Amino acid sequence: MHSEQAIPTNIITGFLGAGKTSAILNLLQQKPAGERWGILVNEFGEIGIDGSLVQGSRGADGEVFVREVPGGCMCCASGLPMQMALNQLLNRAELHRLLIEPTGLGHPMGVLETLSSDHNRDLLSIQKTIALVDARNLSDDRYTNHATFRQQLAIADIVVANKDDLYTERDRRKLRTFVEDLCGSQVNIICARQGRFEPAFLNGETKMSLQGVEPDISHSTPVLAGEQPIPECGYLTAINQGEGFESIGWRFSPDLVFDRHGLRAFFDRLIVERMKAVFITSNGVFGYNMTRDGLTEIELDDCVESRIEIIADRVDSEWVNDLTGCYDTGYRSYSV
Image (cartoon, rainbow, N blue to C red):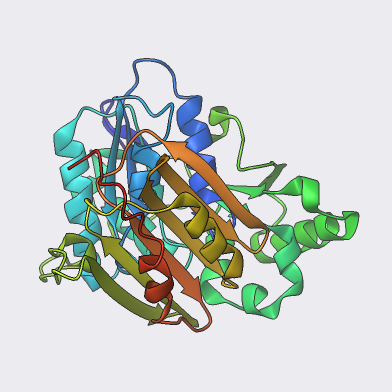
């Protein structure tokens, strides 16, 4: 039984490129005025991009509080990274809702176990778990046989068939058959475009019950690349691998300004599974999001520094040479 003050909490899952961050940005745009929402973001790479995309997004008001847990699944390392970030969010503001976005390559069951522990039981009310899916990927065994992909659906209360405008009728039939075979017919499937769905779908308790599970959070955790000082060369590199993918990312000194057109030319040459970035350019601050469907660019209000994270079957450490070639040496950052 949750206390009346328990914070409604939702897990927003989905494999790489399914649209989790877009969904959260759309939900924030529909947030009731005056409500304080917390966002706990987990990323496969160590650099951490989503927090900057959410916090710097136009329309994200001062009532949105963001914490990042980069460097792989946040429920690993005995759950400590997640619990620490969660405590920081809860201590920062009296939240009306908490949204949690695990990495697309993480273990959502472990996240749910941490949230359902005795330590969190009176603080959080675990509500509907949302899984975003791109039905076109059901023709790819790398998705359908991937344990994380299947686990995301298995714990879902609602499956959001995102990018529905790009589906064929065969895609829709295959999705319904796959979900019903894996989860049963009781799971609600809704269609969406650009990750947009009504906030009302967040309400209601989850079907999963893990009360009484208590993860061990007694271990220490290493300092990740997102927290280390940037060396004199002007950038810091971080590499990670697991779940059949590799990631590479860079943080750049905040006084470095990039040429927007040069960045776009670099992105156009990339053939990767996933890319996210925030860059300070001579034209302003921009966020970038690349999936197999293409590249999107949004203007942001601000960011602390330029960052990029790339996920691929195999990464190339030489990409940083192309990026440093995009410096706009005629400008200095307005944020210095």
